[in-house]
Length: 157
Image (cartoon, rainbow, N blue to C red; front, side, top):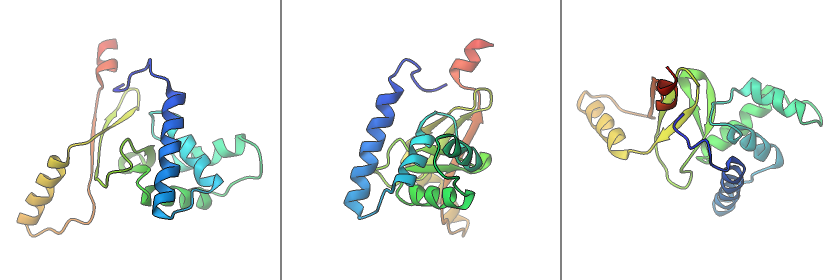
């Protein structure tokens, strides 16, 4: 979709894991083995991963079965640390492309290939929050999800 399909995805995952370990260490947060495994599985694709899909994939990795609530707790930790975003419309999760920056998620979701790309435009969020405030609305969180067709899928039609 919006990613370079020729890139070395293994390198991307290794880089993201390294950044996650550093960020957690700086923040005094503990990236346990299970949290790391869940994060690595989320990073394994540019497509969003559902919690039950992650439970199944963890089960396929061997070891003892992992309960869904355990995976949800790991995902909550990863979200709190800014390492993962929840895509509300899909009830699924994607890795964050900029975990070192506190930001609201803005996503392009391809309805054909299901890949998700994160946008990084703080002005868009600031404008939305400003307009909401002008209407007397207090914003607690922001997540912008654009659903459409990516260039790669449009090119296949």
